[in-house]
Image (cartoon, rainbow, N blue to C red; front, side):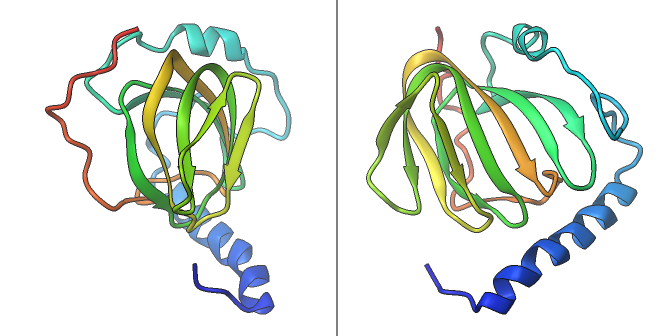
Length: 166
């Protein structure tokens, strides 16, 4: 991975926040889990219970908190996730249930499961090539908040592949 100067690394969050704010203003009409607030409480278990057990999509998610600086989501991975990176958001994933092989920054896939956290900064490639135990559910914290256009796939997910059934 290309090394950035110290100045570029420190400037990146400020640039991303400005971009995130611009996107937030442009997408203000989208439905949010709840309006951005300075504090609050969310029912993570309830949000997980509302996730569909099966899907034709790679993942199903519910946003719990969504503001310019941070988003918090829960999501169920239904199929292997192809290699991709996020243009703007740093991501922290707490594995709530399941087990999978996860590859980060082109490394060999490593097994991670419930009770573990994985994370990467924006621009770091990652993928979930194999679901080993399901349901595979994550609590995600993204900063700045994930917006449309943040995820950059190296190959588009195959819509014809069979969903993982638990």
